[in-house]
Length: 302
Image (tube, rainbow, N blue to C red; front, side, top):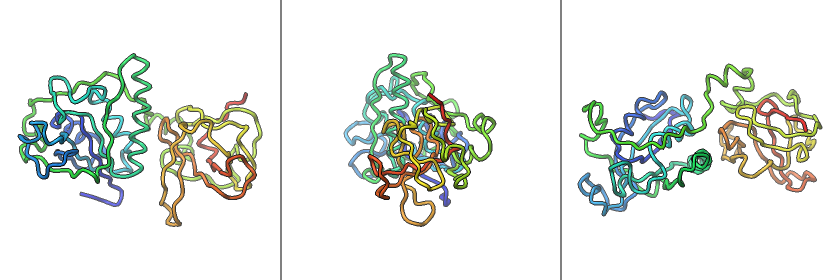
């Protein structure tokens, strides 16, 4: 059942029985179903998929309320519930139908999925674990074929049934929203987590010239350097570049109905920071204005 704020996601983590139960038990998930995706044969049966000749993966379709759980949070669940470094198998289940895969339904989902791979790979590298082999594809290129009825919510019908998942045992670094809400003032939390905007000319860092590094107030990641900060007169702190390109995510934003803007998020925790604008005529090396909310930042002076 879709609502204005519901989204659709598709995940493959091996046998879809246990994966579906993990998702349907997740708060914010509206509905789940299982099926086959990633192959080229129409309307495949379970028996056909198991031959490996159709190239379909066993997939869980997840419909979720984006105000209650984010796609970033679902990606964390996805990576933790299986071994994304295992090619075409999970545990004793071997074959292309058991591969690790994400089928994204939007450009934003693809950006977040590829960024999540980078985040989780850093955690795996710390433990000397291998490289992630998760396939990331556009869902529109591969139709989702619902599996037979006996597969749907299989472990609800068979509570002691087979549930094979080979987790690597490494947590995905995710900020606890309740902890963040308790740690921050309400405006900071609303900006970082709900993409609110502080009033212009009210932010602590609007005109400051203190040398240092501006970090994400949610996770502490380094985002901007004071040497790239300039006075734009817009009422918010302005920078002409991030500290590194991969420190931020750029997401298409159509939320206000006045055309397309480019939202800026922290690449480490997916928190909202502000927006970036181009070709406004500022005398800066990039001719960009990274317009960032003060309350999303913490300045660490040099």
